[in-house]
Length: 82
Image (cartoon, rainbow, N blue to C red; front, side, top):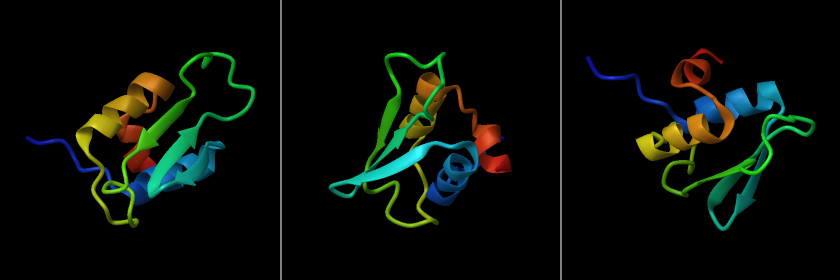
């Protein structure tokens, strides 16, 4: 059984609910960890390419989902349940 697809709208909703900041840069989106999160020291930003964040229904590539997990500890289930 395949894993459920994550869409940009899922990530955007999760970030807004949990205090993450989303900035635009040349079509790409940069997600910045909330201020005061002490466990995140060095890798506190993730850049998502413009093809995966063009609109709310855009499917996010698997590499960006795993990058969110490594950088912030955000799981696929958390993104889909938000």
